[in-house]
Image (cartoon, rainbow, N blue to C red; front, side):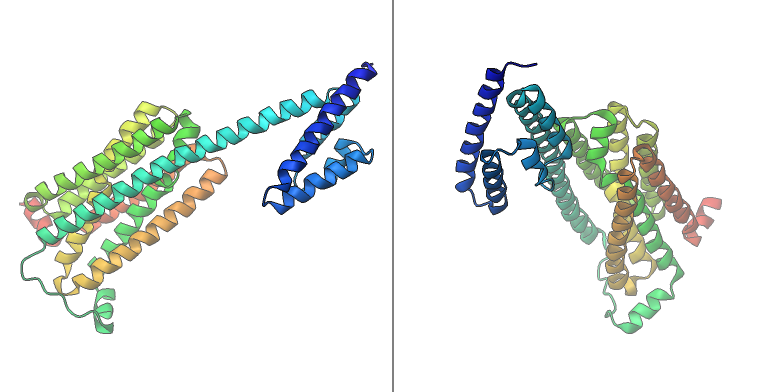
Amino acid sequence: MFPADHVIVDETKFCKALLRAVEIAAQEENKTLKKVLVDLKTRVEGGEDFSAALSRHSKHFDKTYISLVKASEHTGTLGEMLENISDHLRKQLETRQKVKAAMAYPGIMFTLAVGVLGCVSFLLLAWRLPAGLIGAPVDFKTWVELARNPTILLLLLITTLQMSGQFVVFTFMGPLLRKLTDAGPDAVGLVFALYGVSGFIGVVIATRIVDSWGAFNASLLFTALVLTGVTGWALSAGVYPLMALSVVVWGLGFASTNSMQQVRLVAAAPPLAPASVSLNTSVLYVGQGLGSAIGGLLYARELLYGAGYVAAGFIVLALTMVLLSRPRRESIALAE
């Protein structure tokens, strides 16, 4: 048994703390918190056990904590238990704040990287478009012609598959790195930074080789780089340095594949370029949404290692479609 004076002192300290909490809550705008604390104070002052008062607000207090409080009331260690619970909740809050910070920094880096890559892609596309190219007005007839063009439809399918595969992983890259490798905010941010720099380098390389290689061969190269990087991510899951290296390889093809898709769409049917390029942007977002949805399902079910393999499967399909889209004249040239 515990000494009665110990229990009385413990309860007295608790009541003072509760009164102080009610005073503070009275100054807050959170009406729910104020109402709950005032009710707790009223019930405890009326002789009701603190655990019983808490149980009346089970929507706001965890049942585990209520059980711990109830047990501490019987052992005379209520004050100590409340301090332990407070420390635990404080640590939980700090962890959540760190996770939010870890997610915010990569998000900012990604937004900046996408913005820079988008501007660069636009400028390079404008630079490389054939001089004097004038597109046909985008009317209903244009869309009908586009729908009847199998090459354009195949290219749009490639874009969808490429984006779907990448965003199975990319949308959750930060949380995946944290769970698979225990990477901190700085380590996660570094991977996103490497991804952005690698993407920029890939676009520069694409503009250097597209004239001599041809858009098809360049598209094949950068899709293969994406597949290599995503496959490396899947195989090295859990090993931070290898996953970061895989992201670098993946990044080389990330923006370049879409740039090559736009070049190929323009070349496939120049008069339909305004419609086909705009539609390519639309299916790009469709692919991102589809990939993110699949990635979300896998992440929610803790299938963290499987995400990379699912992503690789999409990219394999995309690469297969790229091979099937080989222009006839290029096939003849290679045969010779």
